[in-house]
Length: 149
Image 1 (cartoon, rainbow, N blue to C red):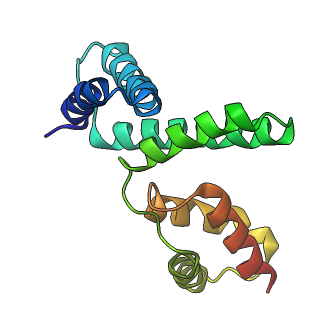
Image 2: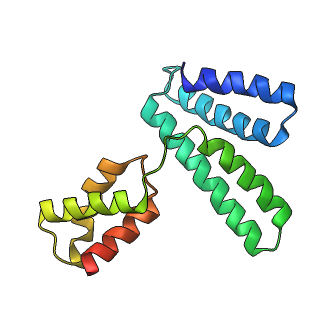
């Protein structure tokens, strides 16, 4: 079953259950997927594009939640965090920090990178390998630490 069909079924279930937070998150996902599908006229969205859309929506929700917390608006932050959890359920499991570190160290050794000046040289291949499997901020942090150490 495609992600769009799964989202549509889950929207129906959320409507029946009167789960407002889940419904809002699912509608946001469906809207973003439909926008992408109609953008180039093909009417479909590749799995890679679906993954990127979900990651973008998740990142937006997390950043909005953090901002609301900083501004003292826990009520609004709670809504964003609930929606982020719903979106996260449709993403593949993220790699742990240890797993990312192993990939980074292997790539650094393979490329012969030796210092912080080689960060760009290492980031490209690592991001290619870990796209969708780990957060970009985490990858960047680990690459910096590995090259600095």
